[in-house]
Length: 338
Image 1 (cartoon, one colour):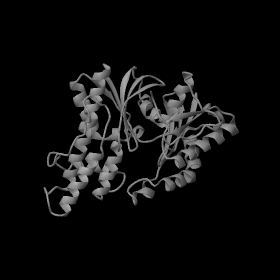
Image 2 (cartoon, one colour):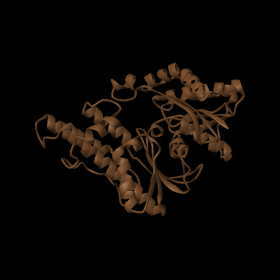
Image 3 (cartoon, rainbow, N blue to C red):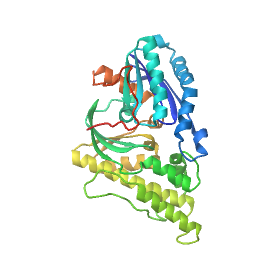
Image 4 (tube, one colour):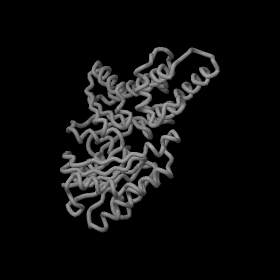
């Protein structure tokens, strides 16, 4: 089965051709970093306009690289949410037009489900497992019992972890996106130079909160600018901030495994590309008898290959695909799991 995947939930315009669920023939991603970097974050209106300008060229490039034609496509899978509504509608309406013109089946995919299944592009993992989805827009914990079988265990109550990386990078004037620049700067700093707060919330909670950490960083920077408090470099602040985020993410992931009695974990989403997080999950997880899987970095960030993969399994396993027809609509706040 040949699946055309389309992803436009935020600021990446992406298309991919996937054969039989795991053989990736092409994956094209057009980012908008140059457009949004001057603002220190994604501007929704500009993101939507950029998708309109790029979507057809990206799909054409994916088809050419895979050496297939639209007529050979068996299924179209497209992100229907959550995300920026203007961005979602570009991909969704393009997919609906193609499905109608070519008389091809169309499946709407939850963006978060795509992230959960991204690791299946590399290898098959035995169910059940605990998944941590951590990105610029989401920080959530799931118990995954099978394709289409997701139980939400925890979520962020305020900022997503990736969003905090972006905001701290903006405070330090390091550029956008914040994740890679903070990680690079942290390698030059001392994480023990200043201990930032860790919010674990009430006992036993698997929820997250990063707003307090972000505020603490802002206060430290403000004191430094006034010549008060410890003389911390940008590298020290970056290292201390990153360690605080990694501490909380890893602790909550291990706690989820203990509560659910599972020993397999998948860490996915844009922040899963962070080397410090990967190392900590492997080391501390290993000490607690856990085995961890991570998608390749290219599959951690938003991409259409993961959407094609999720769509393939929905079709193959005849999973419920409510709304996955030409009347399919986008949802900026689409939920996943019970």
